[in-house]
Length: 197
Length: 197
View 1: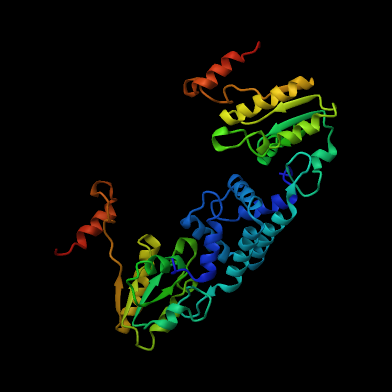
View 2: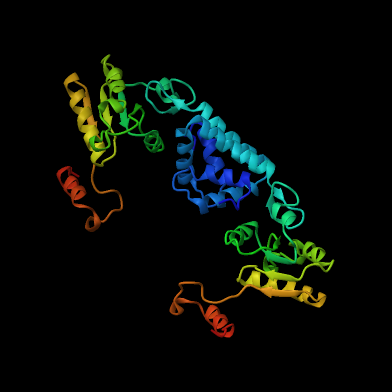
């Protein structure tokens, strides 16, 4: 649309690269930038540059980090490793402030249909971390979808022969859910994984 | 939330300054930035800086522009001036490629309840533009809400004594609308503004 002046068109194009942002939303964001104080806009641009420059993957756990190894890897005992799919899953667990172990980010999940095999995600790195025998438990916290399940089963089969305790996060009804509206698989899991109260 | 590493927290804070963007969306956007190619992220940051640096208001019409006066003001005859509330309204009309006159962006609408009076929007500047008698028509294309209507009526009362033709964009059923679901005011307007076919 050549009705936009060039810097506006460029800014709109930049915003449409964000997930779920179309032309209309990009235009709204662009107007917000133009109406911002000069310092706020400069800060915004700087935040993008700095995030891109400073944030790397931890060479140990694969999570986002500024320092390598990351703050979690370098400050906690690694007797338990919690295996997740994405860096944002680490945040989801860290928010609870309950888990005191370390993490291992796979950066993906096994999905033969999409051509994602064991070598495409960080499984080898996980095996390397448990090789010295110091790890007592590996908690598989991959998603409870088909790929996440397959990934958990695959990893557990590799680790169990090594004598490591391998656990999987519980599945069942989410808090506040009504049985009536839960899907069959969830109800079935919740039933079979029932426990004494 | 101190669970975020600092550059990520800063980036999230920057994104939450955009309209309608909360923590979750900001986090999604931040991840998109981190996963971008380095060049794309640099381009993004540059687009923000350049837009903020290069885009100004046209001293004549008040629209966004890189050059002053803007391309529209400097390339078209100003026999007709279309008065709108915001720069984005100019884009909405320009997209049609039908209107060949110039614009006047008020940057607001009269709203006594919000403390916005005639001196707070660019009405004086409009009077200045029509003072030399070269303008033949002023088209009031403010919104058809209460503020937009009040603004249009206020301006028309100022301009009519000067012998300028003052018009208001038509109101009625929008294209594709069903009479049944239109509000009373719209139906009433549509009826009273009916024309021969």
